[in-house]
Image (cartoon, rainbow, N blue to C red; front, side, top):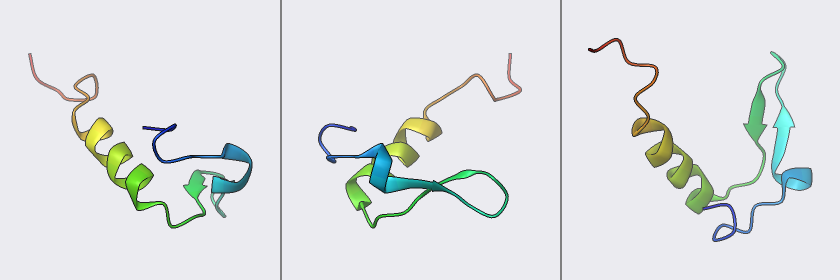
Length: 48
């Protein structure tokens, strides 16, 4: 996903006013890929 979207962390990410990392470029391929990846993770769900 990072290679496909040509993500450059020196340019494409910054900290917002709350100190959280934020994407600074309009890289929709990266944004959508991150959303898909995070929605598939299960370690944060409270299910048995």
